[in-house]
Length: 201
Image 1: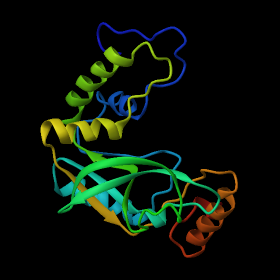
Image 2 (image 1 turned 120 degrees about the horizontal axis):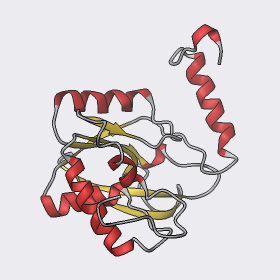
Image 3 (image 1 turned 135 degrees about the horizontal axis):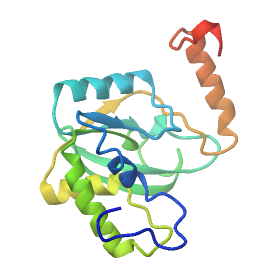
Image 4 (image 1 turned 135 degrees about the vertical axis):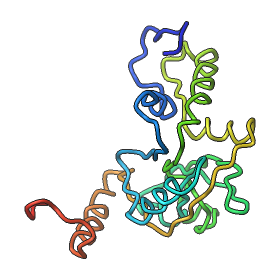
């Protein structure tokens, strides 16, 4: 917690994705990627973000096509991106998104796969302190990483490169999604994309 702030009574959950990244600041001294640990992003997406971080400075985001991130078992929430000349302009959260929601299936969406360099930490520290000043007594409020990125774009005119990918994102939003995810993973293994030590799966 920043100086002058304490965890309020009743707070039992973490402070959100922005705070999660900030907690790693003392261990990170080089460009780094951030992902949701329970999402499957695909090999090509990792190569894209690796190549960007190895050869460029600043921030980036891997952008997926909406149609490659949907489930057949219900609706989802997605951050629809406005992209201009390969640069992120904004991310607008939409709820109840499906193939029939009217949003183009080739729209670029954020699935929380970001690339940063350590220069992001002072900004996150500043914004987390501001967040706590306004929301510190709320036992459920969260400091979201996409919101912090959007504010940095707006207030500091910071560029965020969008690395568009044709990979398919997999996740288990609904219990029924587990079947299709397992089938997709088995297909990757059978094609030799992933190997297991000692032949175990």
